[in-house]
Image (cartoon, rainbow, N blue to C red; front, side, top):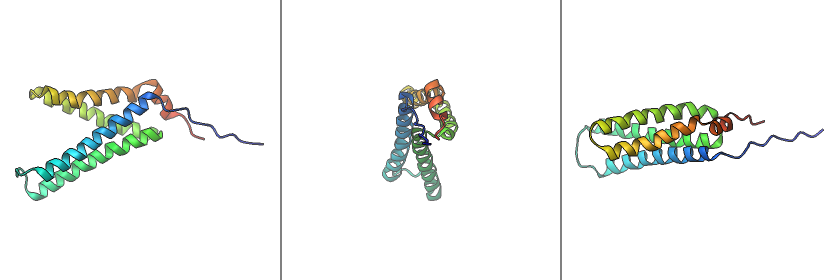
Length: 133
């Protein structure tokens, strides 16, 4: 009696797009933080505040990258935290719109809203919920 392992269906395009968006958002946060921290002469915060804020930004970027990888690998448990972070980024984008920075607001809003929608579409949900035996 032979048991054939079940094969997970191929990743839908929506999963690939979510992965790329999360990876690029995380990489942009990490890169922007390092460039700003290392290249900035303005002292708005004291040293401890600067270090704490830098670590916080780098950790949040790393979380986005890791969530992207987890979704890419098919982890259904990564979907909820990814949705929460994308919703927070969408909300953050409206502060840029209110401040008159339309381009910056769109840079934040469009990828986050796209990822948020794609995390809810049927192909993504079904693929993430597929059982691996």
